[in-house]
Every structure is written in C-alpha cells, then in structure tokens.
Length: 510
Image 1: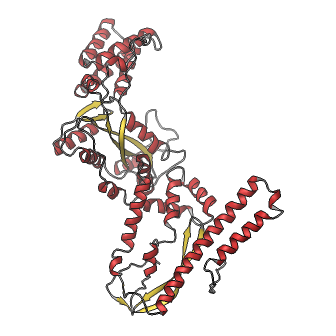
Image 2: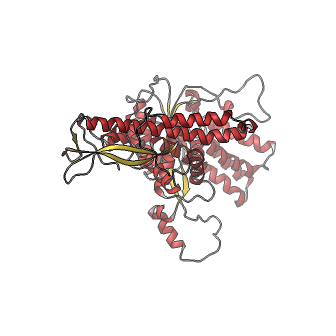
C-alpha cells in the first residue's frame, strides 16, 4: 500500500475533501451520464469505501498531531507501564497498521519509553486498539458472517465488503476469540421477572456434530481405533462411524398457562366438528438457550437450572422439565433438582410417545387406514387423560387375544415397555389442566437451528475450539443478545488490554 503524505496541511481533512470533490467531478462528468445504475453502484461502492477510509485516516492523523504537539509543549501526565515503572522518555512517530471495515489505515502515536522497559502508548488506550491488527468492527463483521454460513462464505463476504484485509485462518481465530465472554455475559444479566402464575419450562436435548479425530471424546476415539483394525469398504447396517461428538442443548422459557383437553391435542377419527374448535397450546416467552460441545451434559443442565433459578429464586412458580426419555438426562435432572431442593414436573415428549403408539397401531391395522387412525387416537387420548398404564395393558391384552406373530408383536412389546418404564413422566392430564406444554418442540427446533443449519453442513469437519465458538455465538443470536453481548465483550477486551487506565497503567498492544 502506498504510504500517505505526512506533511502538514491547513485542513487536516484536505485529502478526504479532495477525494470527495474528485468523486463529485466523476459523477457530474460526461462519462458517468452514460453509466447504468449498476455501474454507478459499483463505482460508488469502491470509491465510497475508499473515501470513508481516508476520513478515518485523516482523523487518526489529526489525533496524532495533537498528541505530538502536547509532547512538544511538555504537557501530559506521567505514564507508568504495567510493571509499575515510570516511562520518562517520549518518542513520537511510532506507527502500527489497523485493518478496518473500510480498509487498512495507519495509526501514529507517541511511545513512552524507559530504560530496559517495553514501550507504552497511551493513545492505544484512548482509541481502545485491539491486541492484533483487526478492528472491533471488522471482528464483529467476521462473527456475523461466520455464524451464518461456512468460513469460506464468511471470508468471501468480508472480502467483498472490506477488501483483502482478513485471511480465512485469521477469521476463524477471531471467531474463537469473540466467544470468550459468553459465560460471564450471562452471569451478569438479570432475567426479566414474571408472576408466580406463569410456569417455568426447561427443555433438554442433544445432537451430534461431525468432528475431526483429535476433537472426539476419549471413548469415541477408542471406538474409532478399534474399528480401524478391520479394513472394510462399507459399514454394517446400524453401525455408527464414530465421527460425532454430542452437543447438549438446553432451553428455558416462560409461558402463560393455556388449559387444554385431550381432544385439543388428538383429533377424533374423521376430523373435528365446528362445534368444538381446538384450543391453542401455550406459547414460549422470554426464551433463553444454551448449548455446548466442550462442557459436559451435567454442566449444561446446571446452567439451565441456574437460569431458571435466577428467574424464580424462591421456587414459587411451577417448574416443568420436558425431555425425550434419555435415561442419562433424566438422572442428571433428578440429581440437579435434589441438589437445589426444587420440585419439578418431569414430562416425556408426547411426540416420542405418539411414535411408539403409532408403531403399535400398525401392528394391528394396515398403515393409512381409518382403523389404524382410530386405534391410535383412542390410545393416545387415554394416555393424555392420565391412563397410560391402562392403555399399555390393553394393547398387550389385544395382542394376546389376536395371537400376533413375533414380527408384529415386537412393536407392541416395545410400546408397552416404553409406557410402563416412564409412567412417572406421563402425567399429561395434570399438564393439560395446568396449561403446560407437553412436547419438546422448542429445544428440538433449537438443535436444528443451532447445529444442523450450521455445524452439520455438507463436508464440515470441526475442530473443538471452532465448533464450540460458533455454537455459543449462534445461541447469542438465537437469544437476540448479540448486540448487547458485543458491547460487553468490547468493554471486557478493553479492560484486559488496559486494566487500570485511571492510573495510566497500560499493556503492550503492538
């Protein structure tokens, strides 16, 4: 890049004004009158960005001139470095590059020096310059693009807008660095208060992410090593390739109670009548999501309960926990409730129950027939009314009477085991009367949005740091907190680089 002229001018923004006048002359000339609107847009995009870069450069140069005049006049405070030693010497003209959303600019400032000590630049703290070359705005742009699409797409988007100011590998590093304050940000936030009549809902689920071999958990790596002993060209049916690391996702939200009846959830065979329209289910409010690949499921569930307890510290509201039936999740939730001394209503996702019941219905009746629909509707309605044990016994008794063959009987036995094994989580009659949700749609939607839409794109193989950072940043976006978080992150980064600005104690940034 060609260096800027450093001679003094009457107007510190003379170069910017000259560039603006040149742009005006181009647009008012005869050549521009023959351009299409697309050509005008293209020219203004490039020339406008360069004009903004010049404005920023002129402002930085103006501040440098003022600082140098202050040094020549002998003004200014005594500067103390991070080692608590005074820097008595002042040397102007120290420069560093800064990559911004407008392009590269050069920052000139005064170095405060001392014998055997590193240089200190008070202007760095005044400008809150980053430790590296890339500006806060460029980092924000990199994060915004990287959590939306692949790193290649993000790099192309940044290059289209800002020019060649950021490499792909550096972009990935900036995304990882941008997620370091997520936990501290949410610990500092105070949730929106609710009345005690509004139930508090917690949902937990998990989803796998394809990882690089070194990023897998130890048990998965051992399984990979064991499978590598045989050289087969194709996996056996049902065999897992051991490429994924499980991410745990938790959702916490408030609802306004909306009582319902079983027939509001399961319509009778033949459809509903106009005389009894179905009542809508509850809608989530004040949604908050957390997810992690690095932290254990115990930690993620504990974070969800921390959020719930922050919303209801005295445990005055009904707590409803919805799960998909995974035994390890149920054990972790039970341990967490015991540790906190809170009473929760654990419900099994009704959609999972319906899948088992429909499989059992198809063991008795041909799929797609009215008889299969009526059989499933009767048993699902009974389960919603609080008679899950009776429904399980009735389907087993019917299978015995009809002497189903083993192949068809397997679906009946699986449904019976599932229902009887989770009877304490099938109190849907209480949930419907209380106006609570009975399905894990919120957290399953979060798994699809947070993980499947970004981390599970075709060909993606993730390292642990990059996947965790993208996942945490996507949860910020899903929670609507990215703007608030970025202000918090920028302030935290400033404190890390310049911990005691009131005492003129600075750390080295370049």
